[in-house]
Length: 236
Ligand code: 1GP
Image (cartoon, rainbow, N blue to C red; front, side, top):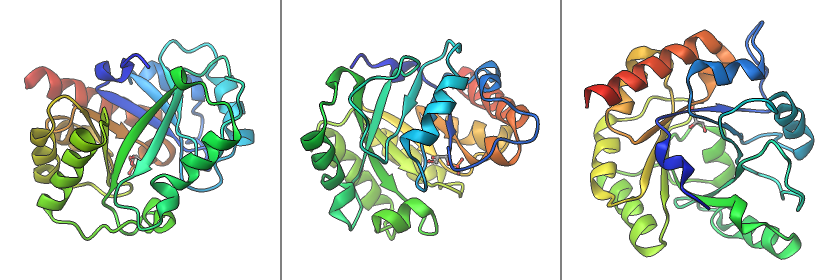
């Protein structure tokens, strides 16, 4: 897959299991200045819930990716740029390292041109993703950096994703992780909720991802996080 994500500074993640904020529309997300939309989540993400969101986003110009937690059907929806396939490096349940992926590959004809893996390191113990994958989040900075190097140098991953879902992470851990990577892109997600938190994390990660703020505070606040991100990139 062409590395479209290399240009992404700010991404908005839409959780099909959560409602939009009052008055917001899916199409409105593309007008915030965010560089891409990812549709994904941990609970109740099914193709039946994803498809109507894709339909609502059909006329948007920015890339739209799905992080599937279900076996994607072989036919490729028109509005979709591709699938981002998470592998969770610190999962205690091997289902989320290779198990589910093996099953999907075995039972469907994935179009590899549309599939891009992401190497996740899950760092928020209270999150649903940590519970689902039984992630070992008790990691110090050296552990995290080692996972990032493992991802890039051993497993050849092009995207490393520090997942602090629901909480703002430690910028020192994010900065050390980016320093340890040669060319892999560092995604950061978790707890970004305003201009300042976006600015702070965009200063230390290649790409920041906002999720809950879309559902809890709405599109105007997402716009604020886009401004924080773009300012951080211009200042660095
Ligand atoms: C979740 O990394 C994303 O997968 C974003 O996290 O919901 O905490 O913004 P938040």
